[in-house]
Length: 462
Image (tube, rainbow, N blue to C red; front, top):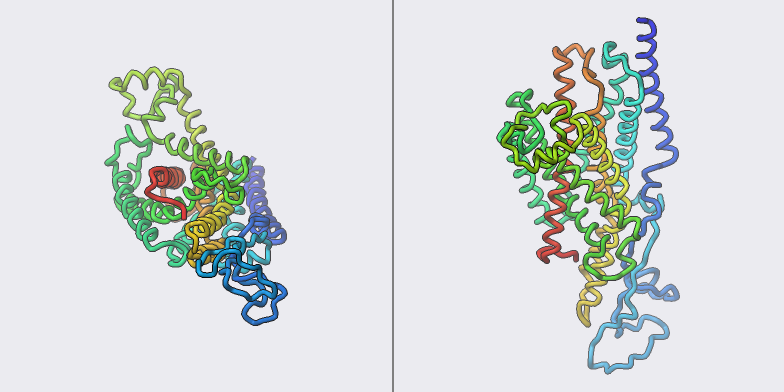
């Protein structure tokens, strides 16, 4: 029996190693990150289109929006209106659409960072998923039973994506100064809220989390991490709200080149609704409506007689606590997958936002000033992969943290410098689950708040 257990543990380690190496080779050879973005349409705002020109000032592809007084072409069209009246000729306005290929993507800034982060996080997530289907000997130790590989891949993947999204958030030309300042404000508010939650100021009758096992230093670092997450997610949430606003055609522009198809639109709606619903599952008053306290009892002290009658009536028809916990885990997984699937539609809408800016500036007046829209189109094209990172990182962080929270009980057994491996394993799983929920919660709150500002006209897409 002992020999069988040792063979099982060794086989798990070999399976994880071979699986990780094989995935690395497959993702590298097939260039999955480039295929993930292949076929998206970006836009170019040139200076002129005159392929037959021989002069140095109008050779090649240049600006499409030209004044009617310029006569660089060989056969300029006669002007019907008086020369004394200056008016912009909209027939000269052009913008070019370009389908992205691997060659185009490689020239974009931060593509290499996205490429490596995509491969590493996908390998880490699939390794954690494989671990759920393997028979693991919990008593053989974290190294012998193969848990060390998905554990390290998950932890390094979360750290790598977090530092990447934090680094791209400090790029000055990729966002407005006011947006970065609001990101710092959100980070500080997230830190204060983290202190309130971690130190138990918020009772479990409001939030279904408890960190009594953490000491004071651990709670402080948890609050710091929560603040950093909230600060880093502000600009991605802002971009997501803009994509939602354009993708669902809330501005009623009725332009096919700006909006998205019905399938992408349903996916965007489903992602937002699922994120809001999942974030509510750890809010105790809402959770009480879904839990039947008569089944298996309740492990929360706030289930007392002074509850409102509506909660008591609803709780009688709810599910058991174990079923409710499974529901929350599945909702986290579904939300993370939906966020991952909406990366492509969100990126396409991010690029379409530049077209909307060009269109608005073109029709703003008879003599439009197109310098702003030209810069907008260039920056959206230049920082394409930066936006991809900001849409991709939250989804993968949720999936990796959820995978870490679903590791076996006492998975840290066998590490010599950990005295109480069972306690530390439970603590790591609880913190990982909480941070996965925290990302979804912050993402939902920030996106909803920004959408409300768009609805009231305080903010607008331009």
